[in-house]
Image (cartoon, rainbow, N blue to C red; front, top):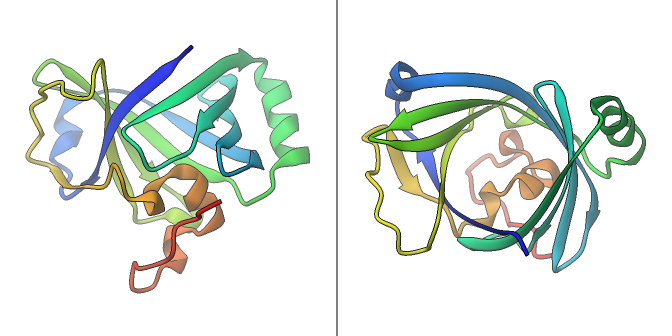
Length: 165
């Protein structure tokens, strides 16, 4: 069984750009949403993936991800996405020996920049970069599946309800 442990933060400055290792464009669509599961198709750079994740809004979640041909991922997104796509550029950033992913969102989520770090265990100590702001790990609004359904641009006062389903 695959377990993902991650923490997520808003990004408050562009200082992370000095530590970029690589970047790739991500386009992802959701094709199933239940109270226990989010199922997505993702084109990440030149690869395709199908991913099943347990309910969002927690630090530790079950995640099953499988590589599929990019052409098939693109076709599945085109035919079966139930909501608008989430589009972002992911930057791999090394900070004090820890790899961070900084996502700069586009489209209807433009203006949102999030950083996440994957951990080996929930109590793992990490150095939080100065460019990382408020932690939003447990705030369901910032989950990608929620951003597909309730894009950041529509939040207005940033108090949109997170998807409970």
